[in-house]
Image (cartoon, rainbow, N blue to C red; front, side):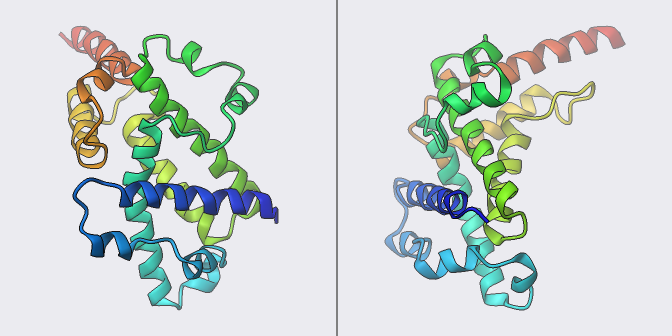
Length: 205
């Protein structure tokens, strides 16, 4: 088990929880309740099989997972890199700009945050697939991917307008300072969804 990968994973949780605690208007008691403690770190390094009988720890992990999602979105909107951005080219063979030619800088910053987080999650999974930390990071990655970076396919799970509304609602709550109109204008996922949805609608007429 690589201590380096695990430390990077714990550092990522600390980063996103700190971002959540920086939400404008969050009451001090709520900020304090999601402070990432040494006990939390020990809990996240436990094996999943050891956690099931500890209901206090299970509830705490659930609380941290929910609180971390807003922080992840905030970090992504700032363009935070959870691993060096150069690793995306090493892993996928192309830059974000070449993969998303329709994207504007606002979206590309967000994409950098998400994809570097995904690579970090894979690092932790490869080294320690059975620890609680891996489960938490994977849940955050999957939730973000489902809404913002869905897997391409012939059938869309929801109309582009519905996906955009869901993105706007969540980003408004978690990143109120983000220019949502600018983000949506340069969002290549929505742009491509609208084009394919229009083509499919015409096909059915």
